[in-house]
Image 1 (cartoon, rainbow, N blue to C red):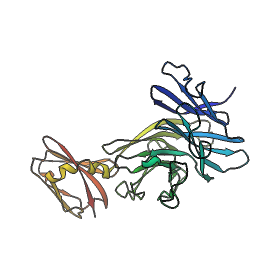
Image 2 (image 1 turned 90 degrees about the horizontal axis):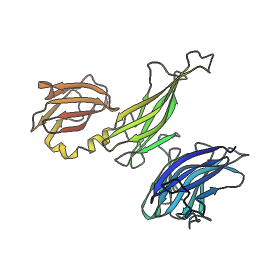
Image 3 (image 1 turned 180 degrees about the vertical axis):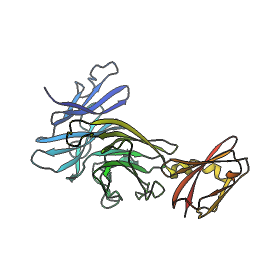
Image 4 (image 1 turned 60 degrees about the horizontal axis):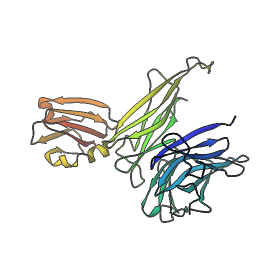
Length: 349
């Protein structure tokens, strides 16, 4: 009769590790590849993380150097304050030498407490992304006070997010839903933060992109997962919901949606080796951009900062492009020659 859920699944050393929740307690279960319990883990393959009087959740599970780290939060039933927690176990299920008795609590918050991502760093440190803000924890489970302001860097967008992915240039993508200012309609909202924890201004407009799936009109648009690729593509998956009759909320139409964006900073970085063979000038430009290449240009394709195709150029059009009527901002050119495709960023002043 217990309420059970699974939040994480890992494969490590031919063993399966599952994290989740049973009623108010979090658990870690380890099994062999044949589905039987791994009795080398805490004798019976199970470990219950029981923080007395609190509801516990595991958001992320990480295994580094035979240490199992569980990242999540706990909440006392009589309060709205969440405590971000880290628990550490040895690979055999015994308590690891970490924090106090294998656990550490470092953040109390009434806002979004979800641990979105954990990134191992040098010297046993770990970068935690909690609700969108960044926290550096040392090997002992304490805040690394040399990082940011006493171990914390606030998300420059000053917002809380529900999903996160790491870009191939070591930046960070975040997504959530937001309300349009003029309506109560939810839309997809995605931002990028660079590796120095500032806004990535090459991404969208000022580091953010708002996407409204407007046909048919959906009143709720909620992103769930992010996935980034090494070639500068970002995929956002979520759900969209429309209520045909606002007076009957039980009747609704719901669909899945997948959005794909291009990241100019990653796209251009992936083609640094080709820049010497193709020249684009002036860049930034106000009116005309000239393109020169030692190889014959077969086609040029122009994209906006979100990866949306704007126009293709062939023949004599590939020598000069008129950008006078384009909106100020960042754009991407894909230049096709016989043997390669070169991607370069241009800026319209």
